[in-house]
Length: 285
Image 1 (cartoon, rainbow, N blue to C red):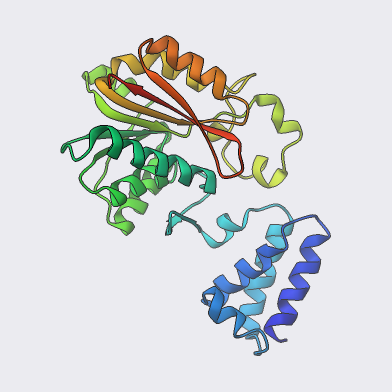
Image 2 (cartoon, rainbow, N blue to C red):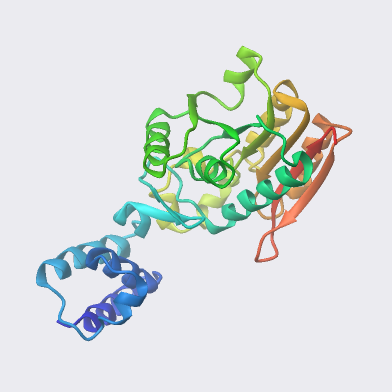
């Protein structure tokens, strides 16, 4: 079997279950160990039987609903590969924009000030924290997560990518409140999907990705409400707070932050698709 024939088989096989037929290319490139340019140049070559067998099993797994990223074990984020498994949410492209806007705000508001302390709350794979540290090495970065296996994977990603980050297991901001620790920048992509949305969401998500990283009460705002209560105890007099939010939640999250920080400047940022995706609070500037 030639490479293009295997790819055509996968495409047809996945379309029958309305899966993304592009997954076939991602999986085949993975098992062939090729980048996209190399892969496109190999389409008329014979595919090794052993490679096809691995590929076939992976395509069947994806057809049954397992995300491609969990099959191959990684996802790309901000140009780097992060290990993922079913203990962590798969990093999304929209979250890259949270990192981008955070870096811009740090530069705009703090300039070249040294010793800035940043915390990433609910770190998951560590994609946000590790990327921020690698993009701005002078940051002192702390990551938290409530679930130990998740934290272990984030630590492994930091080790492999060479990011010096402090990891703490704990529930939102409690570890810092208990120690009286404060930060210049607090960032989070928390769970924000309303519980009822599970009825219409793809089983690729609901049957594989961790629900604790997805769902947050009737309106999806449970975690933001807790943040609004806890943040004043851990934010420095001058601080940046940045959240990723679900579509249509930005005004509610803006209101929560404004209640917590009456004098802060609160701004909603839209993602590349025009959706209200981030809310930032600038405190004391």
